[in-house]
Length: 573
Image 1 (cartoon, rainbow, N blue to C red):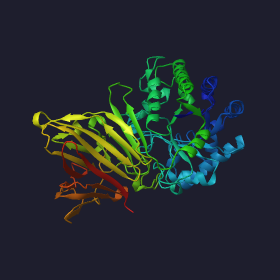
Image 2 (image 1 turned 90 degrees about the vertical axis):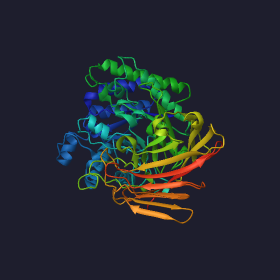
Image 3 (image 1 turned 30 degrees about the vertical axis):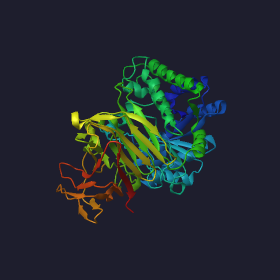
Image 4 (image 1 turned 135 degrees about the vertical axis):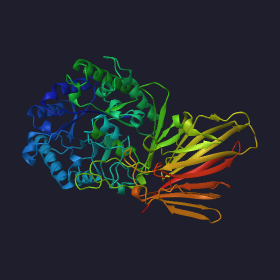
């Protein structure tokens, strides 16, 4: 696993804490990446310290676009805003701010940076930077799954919505920076990485700014007792486990120096905050010495990524409950077509799906279509809409059952295969033992499989239902589904089609081969496909109190056989 240790001082007030962080890293032989915000550039002492660190230790210096509030900004733009979100400015104004910051950086340091950072960069902004400042090769561009939970938790005052993007490093699409590109010609030539690695279970369930690589986040989540914090070690170990499933794993720890100052972390002292940070780096050193972790600068990682990571590849993440130690786990998959979360506590149901194939255009700021919400929309979300992809085996809805991941394999460079541990449902003559499996293909196909291992009645057929409740949105509140088109066809040439009008209409076809939902608001078509004899397909449009459409295929298989339904995603264009 490749690791970046990232630091920044927003002002002279945080410089002492930055010096502590830098000294601890250098004692352990680590190089860091130092990002300087515009406010930091107003301090000659901060600038000189950055230069000295680069000169003496080979640390990298880059720009951070948080902390624009400064005297230099006020003089240049005549604004005394208390908080400046670059991504919420009109694009042309955004460009002027970017130019001002880059040129000011060049004036102090004599070069343009290779790495930059911010809490959110959209595709238009990254494309502008890529064209005008080609030295930039890597950027922190989003905060993984920070959005509506953070907004509510911050008294509805923190306007950062960046849910729906990848948790790992990737080349972004020219249309939307949260979408991984399919190929080089569709990509912006800047590697995107997240602000912090997060707890991948709590990212789905809770506010993940309490659960991340950031030791002060751990303090906010009350995961420590004074200077003792088991979570520090478990967190890194869990991320190291991802090396089992992926060719390359990216990790960063970005603890802004201010978080180690006195008075920042509830009632805890600066001494406690600094000690936890020291323990964190020391554990990185232990794992580095074991050959499991390679610590480097962002510039160095950009070269690794360029050499080792194929554009558009699929990544997998299996994360366990570290905070509660309940045994719960959550599985994630991402490629250039979609991102999914699969919850074993819901029987291996897909509980979140972001349809990248639609390539929804980002458009933020005044007079824009989305104003402030940059999150990539979901096509289903269990927590927000009761919308999911799940199964029924026999008469048992799997969403009510708990299972565990049994194995993860890569049959070839374009596929990821996930199989769950066998489950038993039913009793007596209705007892069925089976194993669920997913086969992800990086061309936009997902095969939903059920292996029937044993039945109480050897020759009896088992009913297996695959169901998708689909919707759309960026928040917990329903959005208009008018315009979604449902379609079904079978081997006999019979078809059914209708537009969603909230009448809860449904149609079933025997010998079904294809079900389809075209969702123009997501630029996406979803299809369920079956080639098994005797399959029954059903489409349903939903109702006002059930704001999701449904596609359902029923198949019948015997012990020793396997049901298989292909879920496919396509761009509507």
